[in-house]
Image (cartoon, rainbow, N blue to C red; front, side, top):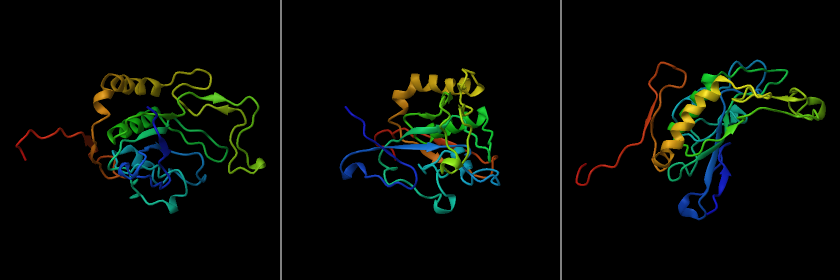
Length: 216
C-alpha cells in the first residue's frame, strides 16, 4: 500500500481525509538556522519546537514576519503526521555559525514525538562533504556563503565518522520507538504545553485512554 505525503510546513493547508486522497503531512523543526541575519541571537520561533505543540509547522522556515504562530494545518485534527527535517544539528555560514547542542537535538526530537509524530526523519543524521566544492555562495547569486566543501552539520554522525553525544541520546529514543512504536502510532496526543519563553513552565503531553463503557 503506497503512502502519500506532502510538505506540511510554510502555512501549507492540506486536504482533510474526508475530502478525498488522504495525505500524511511531512513536517520539520529546527533549533536554530544559519540562514538568519548575523544580528539574530536566536530564531524568533525556535523555542516553540521544544514544546509539545498542536501547531504542525516549522515557524522558522521562512520570513518570521509573515508566519503566524497559530497557523495550524487543516489536517492536524484528523490525521497523523510525520517528520522529514528534524534538525540533527545545524550547518554554518560565514555570516552566522549557530551552535546547536546534543541536548537541543534530543529535546527537539522528543517534543515532536509527544506532539504526535509517528515517523521521525532527520536533516541531517550523518554529515558529509561536497568534493566539487559546489555549495551555496553569494558569488553564485545565492543568499549566503557557506563552506565550499564541508557539510558536517554538527550531525549525530559527523562528516568524518565522528560519533557525537546526540547519537546516543537519540538512540535511546529510537530503541523505545522500535519497541513501542506500533502502540504509539495510533494514539492521539493531548497537549498541555508551557509558556514558550519560560523554561520553568510545565510541558506535558499524554495519550488519553478510552473511557470504560457506561462511564462519563
